[in-house]
Image (cartoon, rainbow, N blue to C red; front, side):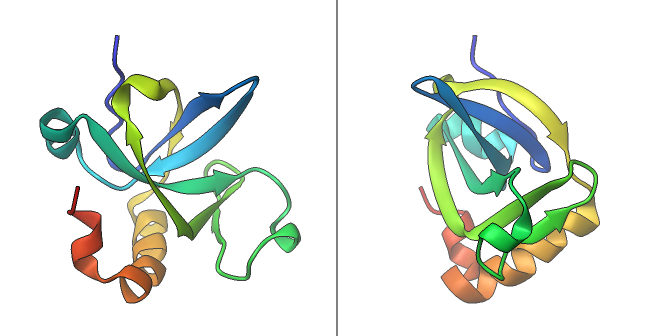
Amino acid sequence: MEILPERLSVFQVQNGEKFSHYLALSDIRYQKITGRCIACKVHISPQNEFSELLIPLEELSMFADPTSIHTIDVNDICNLVGAVTSSELIRVLQVLFPLLGSEAIFQK
């Protein structure tokens, strides 16, 4: 069964024996049409191990990395972990848009 994460959702994808976490940036309509979810990588490790661009997700005690964008097959999504607030997503997008351009969120 495929999982379609709402925008704001944090989900897991299994890579071999370990799990990677992602924050969904595309909405369910996009995912139903394309079968893909646009997402940025989320880290659980301490912030000082990574780039200064990492954005704290207080609700989940994780850090979003808007410089690490992926398109993920919805069939690879195995677990929903939680959700961030709208203001946290806005902070991620404020960093992401200047890096990629706003149209990047909506391209396949």
